Image (tube, rainbow, N blue to C red; front, side):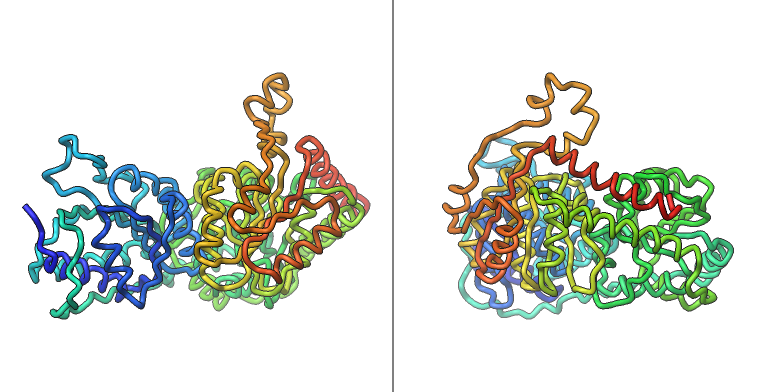
Length: 576
């Protein structure tokens, strides 16, 4: 049983046309035989950018980073077998981080499944519940009915990936040999399906209820966790805060800390000062976005059992503490605009002013401490980058300590800095590839701040620099192991086994890896060298890696010294 080359072309080309009509402009793919029909059709298109990779895991994370930076769906393509399975971590991340991906896997035809055929595994619902939707297509037969179905399926896949909450969809496509589609142009025109995404506006009753609650609760705050889906949200939420007289505790990934807008109510040092005695009783908490990065903030919010706690989410359920009193399924920007228009303007309140005094005192203490810190310190890396990076730069933070330091030490700024991270599953894998994907979006210079273990996990991702001519400045924090574990109870509970089980020193020299991929590597020894290296790296382009060597035990002491400095700064003012 075979499929004719013309039939293969007609169905696959119509499917690809449907993807393009639905907004797919980028495909991140790896070579393989069974995915040949799709790969050739993608390569023939001038309106699709095909990004070829050699490692499926890197390809998937590259597509994830590209989709995140573009705020648009991206397609992934792999052949059958374990190649498709290597997409799994990125699909998990896309699901939890709400990034739209259309995952396409080639497969053996039905008659070759489950009977020992080579490079054949069970790919049905391969990603389980981590894919929003799965469909196993039929083998192409070239019929007009199947072509129309393929076009409709493409539109449905892209629409489903984008629909709130966004995520990954998986289409598995079995192909019979021969796998080369006919080179003749597609003759029959299939009308694509246009899918319209309506924003979920809050009801009149919801706005009235929340307005009343906020009017009755002057001691309220707005918390914005990672929230990067809507570029207009930052203006909408700061406008609401000004109207309500509420401080905005803005995660570094919220998109609210930086930009040329009113930031007078934005609080950026809560991770430091909430470790101390300051923590006033709240009457209302309104939270947008994913769970905040800061653990002290999370603990503070969980303790506010007396407060009305409102979680705003267009779809899904993001309340791991099970503390929400209200879950509002509405578009965050539309809700902010509706509430701002409904609330009585409170202007500058003493409540908001109190938070700003604390924030100002804490920021001065942090800056003063860092200015006196001459030894290399992981937290100061972030502070200096905030000063050195140009407008429209993108900071991509690795997980574990880099993202936490970004949240603690990145000051609010009028600079248009965009901060990204893989905070869905919070994994350390695939981060280099994701950062290259963000660079491929072309929306500004990308600076990746990453730890040594995470860098090691994704060394294959470095190939994207030379293969695709991409720029990436990497600040590699090398403390020779898992630095975050030194902050956890394990460091003191099992000191005799700590290095073996958690510290995991590797002793790697990363220079040969970087230079082998055509990059420039520099290990710095002081802050002057760091400043010069960042400045040169931004100008030079290509792959630039700046290694900042630190020591794990000393890093813990340095962080704790910052927290003490903040606590001491608040006490004389009677704030703590």
